[in-house]
Image (cartoon, rainbow, N blue to C red; front, top):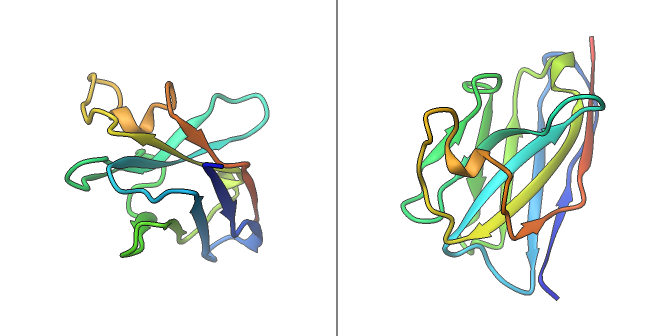
Length: 132
């Protein structure tokens, strides 16, 4: 069965770091756009970091650029979200997602891999709580 498994969430203090992982089961991420989204109650889902399916360009939301880094292991079986200098505003459930050969474009508002619509695969979510 093809699925994603997210892990690495937890509770930290402001200013600390967390690394999330998303592992593939039954496939690898070759030719997949890979992304991290987050959601808090009452707010829309936000795409925070992604890597294009072809070429490997990475994109970040304004809210995390310079603090978060998306990466992938050489075997393309696991990708990561390194989150540094966390603040209480980063508290959320984080989801990983992957989409095969997702076309890489910007519609003037957001890069396609930061827009969660139409993604093939989603992980189960992992909670990150940041205390001030």
